[in-house]
Length: 105
Image (cartoon, rainbow, N blue to C red):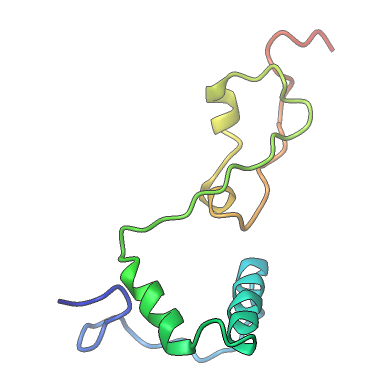
């Protein structure tokens, strides 16, 4: 049975070789993992085993902060401002493009 990171023998195309800056969440994850290893609280093998045991069905969701000026927005109107990146904590919701319903301004 394959684990989530086991892609040996599968065709995923060329591996990108260009370097890129790490996203904020990647920097934070690496900092936590490094701190656990430096304090001898977890080994690299233990960390890898735990990540792989999560399986490919594991997803993280972050509840984004409500953008200012949206206090009277309905749930559907708020949902229009949020995208996948907001739910995994890598960016903030889009600012509202129009005034909320019921706002006389």
